[in-house]
Image (cartoon, rainbow, N blue to C red; front, side, top):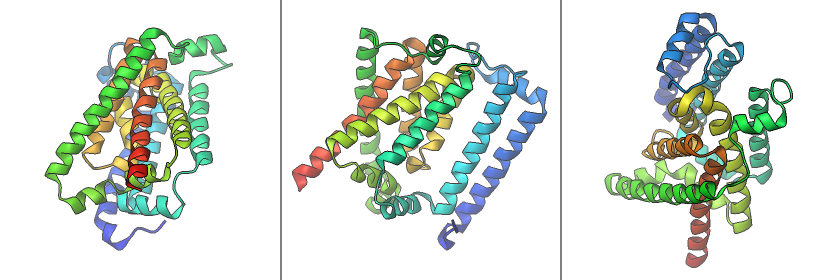
Length: 277
């Protein structure tokens, strides 16, 4: 990928951040005091162990993955470049989405030591997974709908404060993704896969170790279609709400909420498109 000339300044700034992230990763690997400071800022219920090689590896990989994501985002040309890339690729591939979620699930299984330190039953407990209980369904649906309402409010304020052309640029990538999901069955499949894979990885595997706040920041960074826009506030808020569900109820409840949040947006967009057509 070659950076576009009009993105040179953004690429330089991203390069500085990337170098800093990689430097922090190296420090976390080499310095026990640095790992102890991380332990000190995490919540008391966090299971992060500064002496654990597994947790140290996880911290380093998160920082490296974040740096890689920022590098790709900067080099591709930011949101506009990402939108063009999605358009040239023909939209969203169901197979690609499936592969991504399988990788999240494999990462979760590897991280918690499935068949190594834990049998399947213990792994489900560690990930916060269980058969849906009435509370999981009620809270999951309620939080999913509530978060959609929050997004509507943020979108109204955002559109009122930002010029129309700037708003179009900031939402270009998200619009391309939404436009590519043009049928209810595809919306169901994408919403279900994303909710399952992301929640098991972020809320199930990572959050008990690193806490809700740091996990939510990492979650937001990976959603580059919303990067550096007011939508980032909505994504972090959504992630914090999903993390609260994980702590209060279960990862199952968070999966339900994430599915509802994704599907209602896609379904309404499909309906609106059909009405306009």
